[in-house]
Amino acid sequence: MKQYRKRILIILGVLSLLVVTGSCFFLLLKPSQKSKELEYLMGTARGKSDFQLFGDKNQYVLASTNKGSFFVSKTYAITDEYKTFIVEKEGEIHEIPHLQMEGEYWNLILYNLDEEGLPERKIDLFQAVRNYNPKGVPTRLIGSYYVEDTHYFGLEIRDLTDEENWVLRTVYLNVETEEVVDLPKDTKFGRDSDISDTARITNYNKVIDSKGYIGPLNEIVTTRSEGQVPDPNINIYSLYPDLEDKLINQNWSLYVRPDKVTPDECFDTLLHWFAPKGEDLLTVYGRNDDGEASDVQIRNSQEANAWLEQHPALRKKITGDYRADGSDKE
Image (cartoon, rainbow, N blue to C red; front, side, top):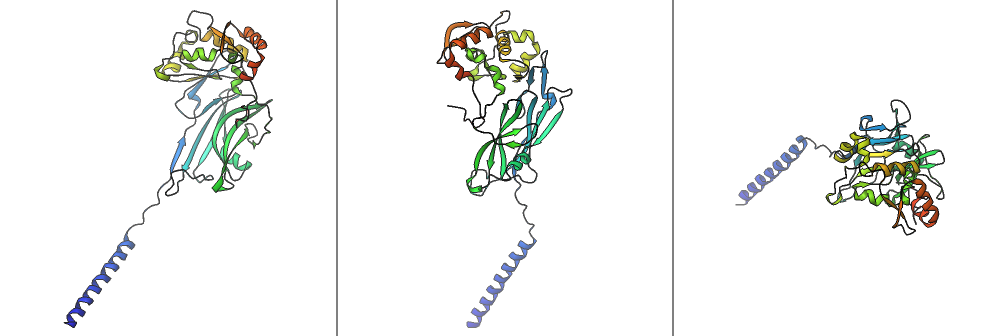
């Protein structure tokens, strides 16, 4: 009986050894699994065929909205291209901030609107920000700012000096020197949207909104809020028939270049463009000091500026110094 038990134990031990050995051998032969590839976000820059200049001074830019970011400044049409990896930590639902990795890029593309052929220039945003702060990475494009004759482009960056307690900062990229800098909080900025200062003296914004358009900035786009259909019965489509399909059906945007048209010229033009076909002027009214429309019709930029002189409290609502970090706001 003892010998029988001993024999059984020996057999079980041999079988166990075979199982363990076989498992180890199987694991050694099994090909190793590839590490999971990182997911990424990718954006393509708009090409020259995605926008067009028109007007007697090339003062207007018509651009598609089917690709990434697009800005029209005094001299440049600005877009971007990027590929950034989504880095996640197991068990975490948020992306982990990280410095530039191999294969990542983010470039600002500038097309010179004043030169024949719209020559292109590329600015490496990762490199520009790294020159400013070796532990900094770009996170958001803000837009153009002007200090006298210097053109800056506002950027939001993430400072990863302390990776556990990173912070967001607003900085300014000099588009000519490609240097990222800080600017004092009391810096007086100009913006592309300054072109609409005269229009903001009136209720023009609400009037064209009722027609299915958004403004006034230096960009005019259609809106379809609550099923609203943009009004096609306006003068701009009589003057430029090709725009109707692009603005209404293809959702293109129309930009006004702020160095080619003054705010007064822009306002006078908009009053005619958005008037019903065959009529000379869009009906708008001067805004009171509280920002609400009065019952006084404004027919041109001269009347608008005269109205502003009579309502100085309105000036602060329509003009001002701008900062990308919002510190200009009350």
